[in-house]
Image (cartoon, rainbow, N blue to C red; front, side, top):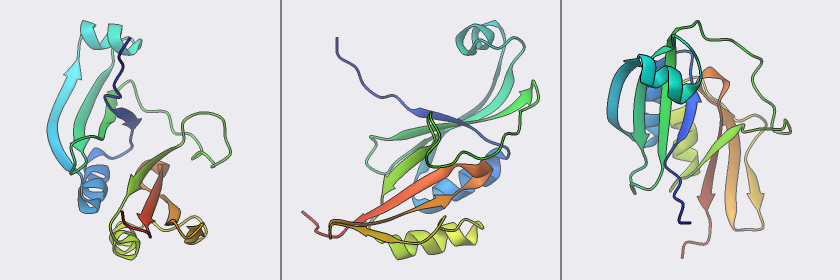
Length: 145
């Protein structure tokens, strides 16, 4: 059975602020909508759900994020995940210039959890805490192929 990753969905506190963060990093918005009704109740498994959504895409067209801000029911705030918690907790991006990406993230109040590391002289990388507590890994390949 062939399978293809379609997107990663992330519930956010502020859709516009989250879009601004990811578009400043280089993603583009390929669609926005407000969704509700029986089909969303069925697909999501949540009665009466109503959300503002946006689909973002990486410049190469291979990666997509679906962001959604719940209008109803109210979003449930949780403590932001830690890197060692079980479950999905981060989204990772390759960047051409890590320092430039970190400057962009900082303009949104998003900073490395600890610092920048080098993995085997192959990558410089870091985790930043993005909008709504999303952990975003940014990695710059050191040995360009």
